[in-house]
Image 1: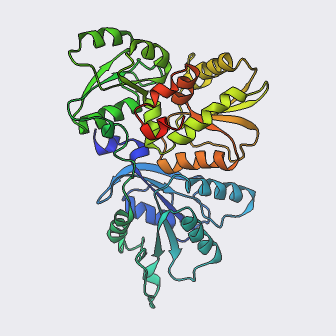
Image 2 (image 1 turned 135 degrees about the vertical axis):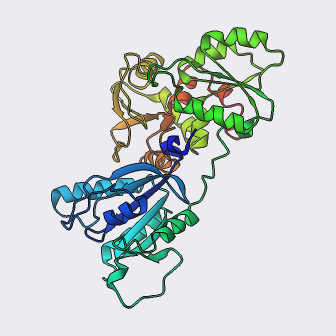
Image 3 (image 1 turned 60 degrees about the horizontal axis):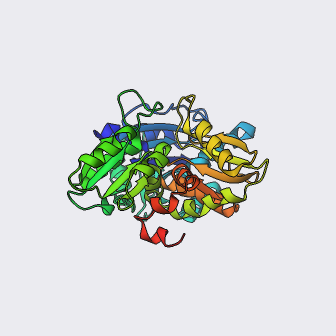
Length: 399
Protein backbone atom coordinates (compact mmCIF):
# COMPACT_ATOMS: atom_id res chain seq x y z
CA UNK A 1 0.00 0.00 0.00
CA UNK A 2 1.46 3.37 -1.01
CA UNK A 3 1.36 6.39 1.27
CA UNK A 4 -1.22 7.93 -1.04
CA UNK A 5 -3.60 5.04 -0.33
CA UNK A 6 -3.26 5.30 3.45
CA UNK A 7 -6.77 5.09 4.98
CA UNK A 8 -8.11 8.40 6.27
CA UNK A 9 -8.45 6.98 9.80
CA UNK A 10 -4.70 6.24 9.84
CA UNK A 11 -3.62 9.66 8.54
CA UNK A 12 -2.55 12.52 10.79
CA UNK A 13 -5.47 14.97 10.82
CA UNK A 14 -4.25 18.57 10.94
CA UNK A 15 -6.84 21.32 11.43
CA UNK A 16 -6.08 24.97 10.59
CA UNK A 17 -8.01 27.57 12.58
CA UNK A 18 -8.08 31.34 12.80
CA UNK A 19 -10.08 34.51 12.42
CA UNK A 20 -11.06 35.78 9.02
CA UNK A 21 -8.32 37.49 7.01
CA UNK A 22 -5.37 36.28 9.11
CA UNK A 23 -4.00 34.48 6.03
CA UNK A 24 -5.18 31.05 7.13
CA UNK A 25 -6.01 29.75 3.66
CA UNK A 26 -2.83 31.29 2.22
CA UNK A 27 -0.80 29.44 4.84
CA UNK A 28 -2.59 26.17 4.07
CA UNK A 29 -1.76 26.65 0.39
CA UNK A 30 1.89 27.39 1.24
CA UNK A 31 2.20 24.27 3.40
CA UNK A 32 0.55 21.98 0.86
CA UNK A 33 2.22 23.71 -2.11
CA UNK A 34 -1.19 23.64 -3.78
CA UNK A 35 -4.13 26.00 -4.27
CA UNK A 36 -6.14 23.88 -1.86
CA UNK A 37 -8.15 26.79 -0.44
CA UNK A 38 -9.58 29.85 -2.14
CA UNK A 39 -7.65 32.97 -1.17
CA UNK A 40 -9.34 36.40 -1.16
CA UNK A 41 -9.22 39.72 0.64
CA UNK A 42 -12.95 39.30 1.23
CA UNK A 43 -13.65 38.06 4.76
CA UNK A 44 -15.30 34.66 5.10
CA UNK A 45 -14.15 33.14 1.78
CA UNK A 46 -13.73 29.71 3.41
CA UNK A 47 -17.19 28.34 4.30
CA UNK A 48 -17.46 24.63 5.14
CA UNK A 49 -14.22 22.89 6.19
CA UNK A 50 -12.05 21.88 3.22
CA UNK A 51 -10.46 18.42 3.48
CA UNK A 52 -7.44 17.24 1.49
CA UNK A 53 -5.60 13.93 1.92
CA UNK A 54 -2.00 14.15 0.84
CA UNK A 55 1.63 13.55 1.83
CA UNK A 56 3.71 16.27 3.40
CA UNK A 57 7.40 15.77 4.09
CA UNK A 58 8.71 15.23 6.70
CA UNK A 59 5.32 14.35 8.25
CA UNK A 60 4.00 11.64 5.90
CA UNK A 61 0.35 10.87 5.06
CA UNK A 62 -1.95 13.59 6.42
CA UNK A 63 -5.38 15.09 6.01
CA UNK A 64 -5.32 18.88 5.93
CA UNK A 65 -8.50 20.62 7.12
CA UNK A 66 -8.98 24.32 6.39
CA UNK A 67 -11.82 25.73 8.49
CA UNK A 68 -14.05 28.79 8.36
CA UNK A 69 -13.10 31.89 10.35
CA UNK A 70 -13.88 31.56 14.05
CA UNK A 71 -15.17 35.17 14.08
CA UNK A 72 -17.70 34.69 11.27
CA UNK A 73 -20.89 36.70 11.59
CA UNK A 74 -24.63 36.34 11.04
CA UNK A 75 -26.80 33.21 11.07
CA UNK A 76 -24.78 31.60 8.29
CA UNK A 77 -21.62 32.50 10.16
CA UNK A 78 -22.87 30.68 13.25
CA UNK A 79 -23.43 27.54 11.19
CA UNK A 80 -19.91 27.82 9.77
CA UNK A 81 -18.46 28.18 13.27
CA UNK A 82 -20.35 25.07 14.39
CA UNK A 83 -18.83 23.17 11.45
CA UNK A 84 -15.42 24.45 12.51
CA UNK A 85 -15.96 23.25 16.08
CA UNK A 86 -16.99 19.79 14.83
CA UNK A 87 -13.52 19.45 13.34
CA UNK A 88 -12.06 19.62 16.87
CA UNK A 89 -13.51 16.18 17.59
CA UNK A 90 -11.41 14.44 14.94
CA UNK A 91 -8.04 16.17 14.64
CA UNK A 92 -4.64 15.13 15.98
CA UNK A 93 -3.04 18.56 15.69
CA UNK A 94 -4.47 22.08 15.61
CA UNK A 95 -2.66 25.00 13.99
CA UNK A 96 -3.99 28.37 15.12
CA UNK A 97 -3.05 31.19 12.74
CA UNK A 98 -2.83 34.63 14.31
CA UNK A 99 -2.03 37.93 12.58
CA UNK A 100 1.45 38.76 13.95
CA UNK A 101 0.84 42.48 13.51
CA UNK A 102 -2.09 42.46 15.97
CA UNK A 103 -2.68 41.58 19.60
CA UNK A 104 -4.11 38.15 20.34
CA UNK A 105 -7.88 38.46 20.69
CA UNK A 106 -10.32 37.07 23.22
CA UNK A 107 -11.78 34.65 20.67
CA UNK A 108 -8.29 33.29 19.87
CA UNK A 109 -7.56 32.82 23.58
CA UNK A 110 -10.88 31.02 23.92
CA UNK A 111 -9.93 28.63 21.12
CA UNK A 112 -6.61 27.88 22.83
CA UNK A 113 -8.55 27.00 25.99
CA UNK A 114 -10.68 24.59 23.95
CA UNK A 115 -7.55 22.92 22.53
CA UNK A 116 -6.19 22.45 26.03
CA UNK A 117 -9.47 21.21 27.51
CA UNK A 118 -9.73 18.60 24.74
CA UNK A 119 -6.04 17.63 25.08
CA UNK A 120 -5.35 18.57 21.46
CA UNK A 121 -1.72 19.20 20.55
CA UNK A 122 -1.61 22.67 19.05
CA UNK A 123 0.72 25.16 17.40
CA UNK A 124 0.35 28.92 17.18
CA UNK A 125 1.60 30.28 13.86
CA UNK A 126 2.02 34.07 13.84
CA UNK A 127 1.46 34.89 10.18
CA UNK A 128 2.40 38.11 8.31
CA UNK A 129 5.75 38.31 10.08
CA UNK A 130 6.91 40.40 7.11
CA UNK A 131 4.75 43.25 8.48
CA UNK A 132 6.31 43.51 11.96
CA UNK A 133 9.56 44.88 13.38
CA UNK A 134 9.30 43.99 17.07
CA UNK A 135 9.52 40.29 17.87
CA UNK A 136 8.57 38.61 21.15
CA UNK A 137 10.07 35.48 22.67
CA UNK A 138 8.11 32.45 21.51
CA UNK A 139 7.14 29.28 23.34
CA UNK A 140 8.05 25.80 22.05
CA UNK A 141 4.74 25.46 20.19
CA UNK A 142 4.86 28.93 18.59
CA UNK A 143 6.45 30.10 15.34
CA UNK A 144 6.63 33.19 13.14
CA UNK A 145 5.71 32.58 9.48
CA UNK A 146 4.86 34.44 6.33
CA UNK A 147 2.61 32.76 3.79
CA UNK A 148 3.26 35.67 1.42
CA UNK A 149 7.06 35.24 1.43
CA UNK A 150 7.11 31.49 2.21
CA UNK A 151 9.09 32.26 5.37
CA UNK A 152 9.52 29.42 7.91
CA UNK A 153 7.01 27.18 6.09
CA UNK A 154 9.27 24.14 6.24
CA UNK A 155 10.07 24.87 9.89
CA UNK A 156 6.31 24.89 10.57
CA UNK A 157 6.04 21.45 8.94
CA UNK A 158 8.89 20.21 11.13
CA UNK A 159 7.19 21.63 14.22
CA UNK A 160 3.93 19.85 13.31
CA UNK A 161 5.85 16.61 12.84
CA UNK A 162 7.70 16.96 16.14
CA UNK A 163 4.58 17.34 18.29
CA UNK A 164 2.65 14.46 16.70
CA UNK A 165 2.36 11.48 19.01
CA UNK A 166 1.97 8.02 17.50
CA UNK A 167 -1.39 6.34 18.00
CA UNK A 168 -1.05 4.44 21.34
CA UNK A 169 -3.28 1.67 19.97
CA UNK A 170 -1.23 1.21 16.79
CA UNK A 171 -0.04 -2.28 17.80
CA UNK A 172 -3.37 -3.48 19.17
CA UNK A 173 -5.39 -4.43 16.14
CA UNK A 174 -4.50 -8.12 16.10
CA UNK A 175 -0.74 -8.58 16.08
CA UNK A 176 -0.44 -8.71 19.87
CA UNK A 177 -2.91 -11.64 19.97
CA UNK A 178 -0.80 -13.99 17.86
CA UNK A 179 2.73 -15.32 17.64
CA UNK A 180 4.94 -15.83 14.55
CA UNK A 181 3.70 -18.74 12.40
CA UNK A 182 0.29 -18.88 14.11
CA UNK A 183 -2.44 -19.61 11.59
CA UNK A 184 -5.35 -17.17 11.48
CA UNK A 185 -8.43 -17.79 9.33
CA UNK A 186 -10.14 -14.67 8.02
CA UNK A 187 -13.74 -15.30 6.97
CA UNK A 188 -14.53 -12.61 4.42
CA UNK A 189 -17.83 -12.79 2.54
CA UNK A 190 -17.77 -10.91 -0.74
CA UNK A 191 -19.26 -7.63 0.48
CA UNK A 192 -21.57 -6.05 -2.08
CA UNK A 193 -20.86 -2.64 -0.54
CA UNK A 194 -17.13 -2.91 -1.29
CA UNK A 195 -15.77 -1.66 -4.63
CA UNK A 196 -15.49 -4.47 -7.17
CA UNK A 197 -12.21 -6.36 -6.87
CA UNK A 198 -11.37 -5.10 -3.38
CA UNK A 199 -11.64 -6.26 0.21
CA UNK A 200 -13.26 -3.85 2.66
CA UNK A 201 -10.90 -1.75 4.77
CA UNK A 202 -11.05 -3.72 8.06
CA UNK A 203 -10.09 -6.90 6.22
CA UNK A 204 -7.17 -5.18 4.50
CA UNK A 205 -5.85 -3.72 7.75
CA UNK A 206 -6.10 -6.98 9.69
CA UNK A 207 -4.22 -8.83 6.94
CA UNK A 208 -1.49 -6.18 7.03
CA UNK A 209 -1.26 -6.39 10.83
CA UNK A 210 -0.93 -10.19 10.69
CA UNK A 211 1.87 -9.85 8.14
CA UNK A 212 3.63 -7.52 10.57
CA UNK A 213 3.29 -10.23 13.23
CA UNK A 214 4.73 -12.90 10.88
CA UNK A 215 1.53 -14.91 11.32
CA UNK A 216 -0.08 -16.94 8.54
CA UNK A 217 -3.29 -15.48 7.10
CA UNK A 218 -5.77 -17.83 5.44
CA UNK A 219 -8.48 -15.81 3.69
CA UNK A 220 -11.67 -17.65 2.77
CA UNK A 221 -15.39 -17.17 2.21
CA UNK A 222 -17.82 -18.50 4.83
CA UNK A 223 -18.74 -21.43 2.60
CA UNK A 224 -15.16 -22.76 2.77
CA UNK A 225 -14.65 -22.73 6.54
CA UNK A 226 -15.50 -26.36 7.30
CA UNK A 227 -13.34 -27.70 4.51
CA UNK A 228 -10.43 -25.41 5.44
CA UNK A 229 -10.48 -26.56 9.07
CA UNK A 230 -10.54 -30.20 7.93
CA UNK A 231 -7.51 -29.94 5.65
CA UNK A 232 -5.30 -27.94 8.02
CA UNK A 233 -2.67 -30.12 9.71
CA UNK A 234 -2.56 -27.84 12.76
CA UNK A 235 -5.58 -26.00 14.08
CA UNK A 236 -5.58 -22.20 13.72
CA UNK A 237 -5.00 -19.94 16.70
CA UNK A 238 -7.89 -17.67 15.77
CA UNK A 239 -10.82 -17.27 13.40
CA UNK A 240 -11.84 -13.71 12.54
CA UNK A 241 -15.15 -13.25 10.77
CA UNK A 242 -17.28 -10.62 9.17
CA UNK A 243 -20.13 -9.94 11.61
CA UNK A 244 -22.84 -10.71 9.05
CA UNK A 245 -21.99 -14.42 9.14
CA UNK A 246 -21.06 -14.58 12.85
CA UNK A 247 -23.65 -17.21 13.76
CA UNK A 248 -22.80 -19.58 10.90
CA UNK A 249 -19.06 -19.26 11.50
CA UNK A 250 -19.49 -19.87 15.24
CA UNK A 251 -21.34 -23.13 14.57
CA UNK A 252 -18.58 -24.34 12.25
CA UNK A 253 -15.64 -23.32 14.49
CA UNK A 254 -14.63 -25.77 17.25
CA UNK A 255 -14.84 -24.40 20.78
CA UNK A 256 -11.09 -24.81 21.35
CA UNK A 257 -10.33 -22.22 18.65
CA UNK A 258 -10.62 -18.53 19.50
CA UNK A 259 -13.30 -16.67 17.52
CA UNK A 260 -13.93 -12.95 17.09
CA UNK A 261 -14.96 -10.46 14.40
CA UNK A 262 -13.35 -7.61 12.49
CA UNK A 263 -15.81 -5.22 14.14
CA UNK A 264 -14.85 -6.35 17.64
CA UNK A 265 -11.14 -6.03 16.83
CA UNK A 266 -11.74 -2.47 15.71
CA UNK A 267 -13.71 -1.67 18.87
CA UNK A 268 -10.63 -2.64 20.88
CA UNK A 269 -8.30 -0.83 18.45
CA UNK A 270 -10.31 2.38 18.86
CA UNK A 271 -10.37 2.03 22.65
CA UNK A 272 -14.13 1.51 23.12
CA UNK A 273 -14.55 -2.26 23.50
CA UNK A 274 -15.57 -2.06 27.16
CA UNK A 275 -18.16 0.67 26.40
CA UNK A 276 -19.62 -1.42 23.60
CA UNK A 277 -19.77 -4.67 25.58
CA UNK A 278 -21.51 -2.99 28.52
CA UNK A 279 -23.87 -1.03 26.26
CA UNK A 280 -25.27 -3.99 24.32
CA UNK A 281 -27.15 -5.29 27.37
CA UNK A 282 -29.68 -2.49 26.83
CA UNK A 283 -31.24 -4.67 24.12
CA UNK A 284 -32.93 -6.65 26.89
CA UNK A 285 -34.84 -3.66 28.28
CA UNK A 286 -36.00 -1.91 25.10
CA UNK A 287 -39.70 -1.04 24.93
CA UNK A 288 -42.19 -0.60 22.13
CA UNK A 289 -41.71 2.70 20.24
CA UNK A 290 -38.18 3.27 21.57
CA UNK A 291 -35.86 5.06 19.16
CA UNK A 292 -32.57 3.43 18.13
CA UNK A 293 -29.82 5.35 16.33
CA UNK A 294 -27.69 3.30 13.94
CA UNK A 295 -24.59 5.23 12.96
CA UNK A 296 -21.94 4.55 10.33
CA UNK A 297 -18.61 6.31 10.09
CA UNK A 298 -18.51 6.21 6.31
CA UNK A 299 -20.94 6.89 3.50
CA UNK A 300 -21.75 4.39 0.76
CA UNK A 301 -24.55 3.49 -1.59
CA UNK A 302 -27.18 1.54 0.34
CA UNK A 303 -27.68 -2.00 -0.93
CA UNK A 304 -30.98 -3.89 -0.69
CA UNK A 305 -29.50 -6.07 2.08
CA UNK A 306 -27.42 -3.36 3.72
CA UNK A 307 -26.09 -4.42 7.12
CA UNK A 308 -26.79 -1.14 8.94
CA UNK A 309 -30.11 -0.06 7.50
CA UNK A 310 -31.73 -3.42 6.71
CA UNK A 311 -30.24 -6.49 8.38
CA UNK A 312 -29.41 -5.05 11.81
CA UNK A 313 -32.85 -3.46 12.42
CA UNK A 314 -34.49 -6.73 11.37
CA UNK A 315 -32.33 -8.84 13.69
CA UNK A 316 -32.84 -6.44 16.62
CA UNK A 317 -36.63 -6.50 16.25
CA UNK A 318 -36.64 -10.28 16.01
CA UNK A 319 -34.50 -10.52 19.16
CA UNK A 320 -36.39 -7.95 21.26
CA UNK A 321 -39.85 -8.71 19.86
CA UNK A 322 -40.57 -4.97 20.13
CA UNK A 323 -41.81 -2.42 17.62
CA UNK A 324 -38.88 -0.05 17.45
CA UNK A 325 -38.10 3.15 15.56
CA UNK A 326 -34.75 3.28 13.77
CA UNK A 327 -32.92 6.41 12.68
CA UNK A 328 -29.61 6.54 10.81
CA UNK A 329 -26.54 8.75 10.56
CA UNK A 330 -23.45 8.35 8.41
CA UNK A 331 -20.09 9.89 7.67
CA UNK A 332 -19.16 12.95 9.71
CA UNK A 333 -22.76 13.47 10.81
CA UNK A 334 -23.50 12.54 14.42
CA UNK A 335 -26.15 14.30 16.57
CA UNK A 336 -24.99 16.10 19.69
CA UNK A 337 -28.38 15.79 21.39
CA UNK A 338 -29.01 12.06 21.89
CA UNK A 339 -31.85 12.36 24.37
CA UNK A 340 -34.52 10.87 22.08
CA UNK A 341 -32.62 7.59 21.70
CA UNK A 342 -32.83 4.60 24.00
CA UNK A 343 -29.74 3.04 22.42
CA UNK A 344 -27.05 3.71 19.81
CA UNK A 345 -25.43 1.06 17.65
CA UNK A 346 -22.31 2.19 15.82
CA UNK A 347 -20.36 0.57 13.01
CA UNK A 348 -16.81 -0.71 13.52
CA UNK A 349 -15.46 2.84 12.94
CA UNK A 350 -12.64 1.78 10.63
CA UNK A 351 -12.96 5.09 8.72
CA UNK A 352 -12.94 7.32 11.82
CA UNK A 353 -10.03 8.64 13.82
CA UNK A 354 -9.72 7.35 17.40
CA UNK A 355 -10.45 10.83 18.77
CA UNK A 356 -13.73 11.09 16.86
CA UNK A 357 -14.82 7.60 17.90
CA UNK A 358 -14.07 8.30 21.56
CA UNK A 359 -15.91 11.63 21.29
CA UNK A 360 -19.06 9.88 20.04
CA UNK A 361 -18.92 7.22 22.75
CA UNK A 362 -18.17 9.81 25.44
CA UNK A 363 -21.08 11.95 24.23
CA UNK A 364 -23.38 8.95 24.66
CA UNK A 365 -21.94 8.16 28.08
CA UNK A 366 -22.42 11.76 29.28
CA UNK A 367 -26.09 11.62 28.24
CA UNK A 368 -26.58 8.14 29.76
CA UNK A 369 -27.38 6.56 26.40
CA UNK A 370 -26.12 2.95 26.04
CA UNK A 371 -23.93 2.50 22.95
CA UNK A 372 -22.56 -0.60 21.27
CA UNK A 373 -21.31 -1.60 17.83
CA UNK A 374 -22.39 -3.87 14.98
CA UNK A 375 -20.18 -6.88 15.74
CA UNK A 376 -20.88 -6.95 19.46
CA UNK A 377 -24.62 -6.51 18.90
CA UNK A 378 -24.74 -9.35 16.37
CA UNK A 379 -22.68 -11.62 18.63
CA UNK A 380 -24.96 -10.84 21.60
CA UNK A 381 -28.15 -11.48 19.62
CA UNK A 382 -26.77 -14.87 18.57
CA UNK A 383 -25.68 -15.81 22.10
CA UNK A 384 -21.95 -15.87 21.26
CA UNK A 385 -20.69 -12.59 22.70
CA UNK A 386 -18.81 -14.21 25.57
CA UNK A 387 -17.09 -16.58 23.21
CA UNK A 388 -16.21 -13.79 20.78
CA UNK A 389 -14.31 -11.77 23.43
CA UNK A 390 -12.66 -14.73 25.17
CA UNK A 391 -9.35 -13.79 23.55
CA UNK A 392 -9.45 -10.48 25.50
CA UNK A 393 -9.16 -11.67 29.16
CA UNK A 394 -9.65 -8.22 30.74
CA UNK A 395 -12.99 -7.71 28.99
CA UNK A 396 -14.04 -11.37 29.19
CA UNK A 397 -13.90 -11.51 32.98
CA UNK A 398 -16.23 -8.50 33.25
CA UNK A 399 -19.28 -10.24 31.73
